[in-house]
Amino acid sequence: MRRREVLGEVLGGVLAAIAAPLLPGVPRPARAADAATGNWPDRPIRLIVPYAAGGGTDAIARAVAQKAGERLGATIVVDNRPGGAGNLATKQAAEAAPDGYTLLVGNIGPIAVNPSLFRNLTPDPATALAPVTLLAAAPMLILVARDLPVRDLAGLIALARAKPGEITYGSAGNGSANHLAGAYFALRAGIDIQHVPYRGAGPALNDLVAGTLQMMPATLPSSIGLVRDGLVRALAVTSAQRVPSLPAVPTVAEAGVPGYEMSGWYGIMAPARTPPAIIGRLREAVAEALREPALRERILAEGAEPSGDTPEEFGRFIAAERAKWAAVVRDARITVE
Image 1 (cartoon, rainbow, N blue to C red):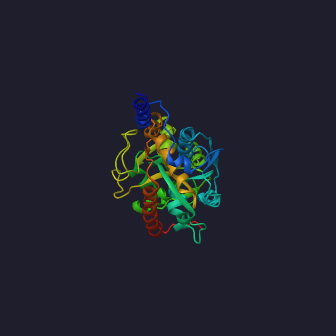
Image 2: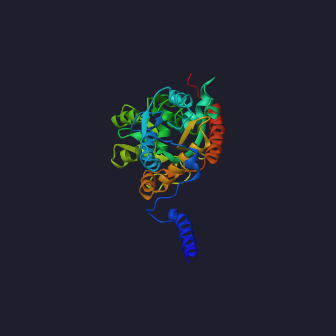
Image 3: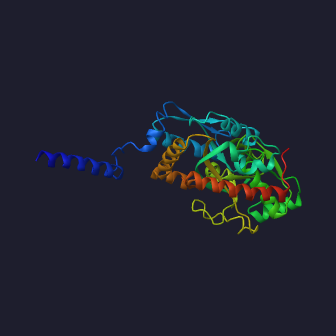
């Protein structure tokens, strides 16, 4: 009887270990990845954001950092490092120790666009940084100041053609998603508008609200509240389809510029040579956070689409984005130096 009881206890333990991850509120057993990462993390993790607080990149970073940190049992501290079109923060992250304690929120500008914009850019993000996971992708809104005398995208294009070089648009800096969206829009619409770079999307949006700027392409997470409060006017969305959060706003293609489509995106990256086990555990924690209903609904409500893909998938996505924007930079003759 005792052998049968012992066998039953062992079998019960095995079944409990298998079932535990499936039961809400039941801690999961330690995994092989936990052993491979040793004591990591045993101190706060720094998450570098290449732009000032208040923009779309910062908003997504802070929301995910809190929830992912809870799953890792560590505090993830957001460190805003604006300037240099995101190159300064990217360089800082790339040159950090590859130990999992310094991460970067990479986005379209520093990671996919700047290698084509800046000659002799070092380090090259493609080799100096390792992709962890895509956090979210968000279309942008073509915004104008409230006092600009236009009510739709056709009116903005007509005004720009009547006053070449006089319409100003802001961005989070040279090479940022805002910059590329505006330059791409000008190229496709055949207009001449003046780019004004800022040290982050937040300060640029403040000037748009104040009327100092006349126009700005901005991500939905950073600007949808301003639109809903009537502080700025949204003329179009840059995605291929309208977004549920602003169903009355047409796409740029619908509004008269066929073929125009783009999205801003945000992803976690680590210094190259960061141990694969740490990257895997990071990705898992972030993906779990993005599946949490409250966080997922928050991101969706702001017009972004949560992801949490694998490092390999994120790497392929970055390569495709880099090729796309290299062509836009070339065709639009965009220079920043």
